[in-house]
Amino acid sequence: MGLIYIDGKLIKKENAKISVFDHGFLYGDGVFEGIRSYSGFIFKFAEHIDRLYESANTIMLKMPMTKKEMSNEVIKTVKANKLKDSYIRLIVTRGVGDLGLDPRKCPKPTTIIIADKIALYPKVVYEKGIEIITVPTRRSIAEALNPQIKTLNYLNNILAKIEAINAGAPEALMLNSGGFVAECTGENIFIVKKSGLVTPATHCGILKGITRDAVIALADKRNIACKEDILTRHDLFNADECFLTGTAAEIIPVVKIDSRPIGDGKPGKMTKKLMDDFRALTKISGVKVE
Ligand code: PMP
Image 1 (cartoon, rainbow, N blue to C red):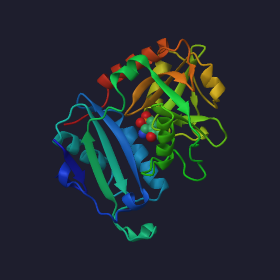
Image 2: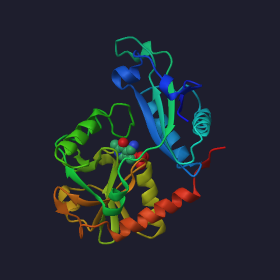
Image 3: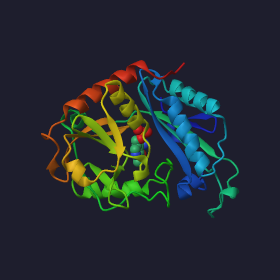
Image 4: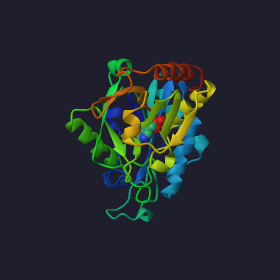
């Protein structure tokens, strides 16, 4: 239907515009979430709303409404767009200010909700797996801009994505400043080693993904051990399996890293099991859009 929510109003896509003085635009000063709905149910809704409010709290952005009100506005937007399976982008910027950085000059945050479709990669990537490469750009250090804050400033990730694309790979593996594995540009990474899962710990400088948490819980249900640890590229190269997780990406098998085939170079058995479990989970959980 193409109706975009801006500060309480639903506006036709063509007319959905914000001020050029909005600090979300001028400085990337704002926070966001990417959320999915499956068959009319919003997946991990409370977790996304909680993370949005935590991101806002850390950057001292005073949210313009309560979590409950925000959730209702999201539901209203999804409903208005008559979408059952959707990708929801929920954005809160610092709002309109002047040309200086000072957030005190932005009296009112801007809230934007887009409910649309998303397909990051073609279907074949989910069936045959993806190839990723390590890029020179390191993940931002937590002391500069903590990757746990989901801010509107994604240049760190975009630079990494550009480097991967320039090198002919669809996705980048980002290391942290210590040279340890962090994450991809919009996904967390897991390996399977000796029938257990390992994923970089949050202190490795990653966004604590909601899909990551869901996969850890699914593994636990199957009595598959999952360790949050420090990982090197060597660990990745010698993994039995590897996969990526993210709201938009869902679960993608990784079959090659820096030209080394992972395992037998095909999507792994455990990866496929978890992909099935995840698909099933999206069908039985979520907050109803009504
Ligand atoms: N890392 C980064 C940098 C991301 O942008 C995302 C997706 N927003 C993720 C990981 C995955 O997080 P989630 O599963 O919560 O979507």
